[in-house]
Image (cartoon, rainbow, N blue to C red; front, side, top):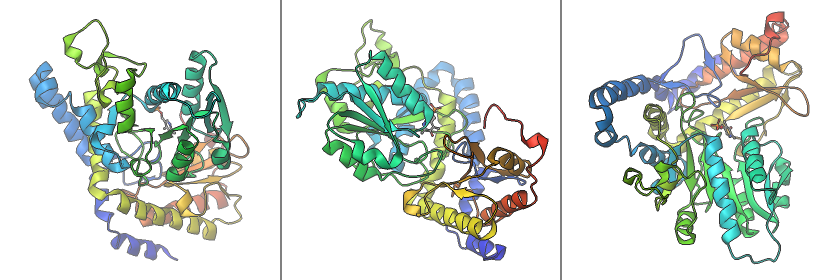
Length: 427
Ligand SMILES: *Cc1c(COP(=O)(O)O)cnc(C)c1O
């Protein structure tokens, strides 16, 4: 394989034209779209329009005239198409952390209200030890707040299915692991949880916009996800949450609310009633006033994926990660890299992670020469070089050039300089 083969692959790539939709600096190879998606070309104009023509010209009237009030549902309905949900099952709001709090509280309450088949009380919240920290912290915070009623059980990735039994109230998992790129089988795990009488919450932070997800086909209960990674919504973009239609109905029937009962989740916020009465639909997951500027940016990001379609995105993602792995195996052998991500594409998301004894300075040296990936600490062993592959704007030739940069940095020990040792606040 030579560089020309990659250029040829780009010429035949059905998604090649989509790269034009993004602003990308010429001197950068961007393999970090899993951490912060690139800037869509449409975003600046869309946000400027909201600022000048809506906020500036219409002032407060824009809440009604410019569709501001509908934005969390409108953008939610667009994300629903990417994750196999119905339009009224998804809302854009808050951050992933806050959304997880809301759906976890709902799931625990729903479980407590259900007639239980077994006499055993369900006191366990099951998750994965290597889950993203905020998911574990939110779970710990809520469990602690509930006064020790729940026990958190953490197991390894491969032990999940075996750990689900009739003591488990809720299973909280991230579909694609942020540090390894390993992907759970969403439908079988959901099925396994439900068969045991548990409720299942999926965090789709590294899936939405990266791998096709069909929540309805899996009969998924709850999900949350992130707007600023593969959805290209911009730094700190609003997150989203999914609540299956049947659970929304159950909440109405059983008359309970999610605990962050802010006025945006009220049935009629502008009645200014003194008593909280929840909206009867997914709007009840709203809390405070939505960020309209941020939603305008997120909508542009989501539109870039809708234009391409998730099947095409996944097909290219698999080709990009396969190419990267093959080139690393061919050209970077004997440089002390260990593959952390599953070699079989059906078990990984859209990122590849390589452990290396000097991962931090190696990544700093790569960034200094324009190849942007990132670094993640590892509990067990050496640190991890993480490379994300966003198929809408990454070319096959970029993969070639990235592996060349990696090979060069490793073989010349270009990383072994004092300036690459200094840790930064954000890695
Ligand atoms: C990125 C990420 C988050 C981010 O949470 P925020 O509250 O938006 O900061 C949460 N969960 C997972 C699995 C992530 O990868």
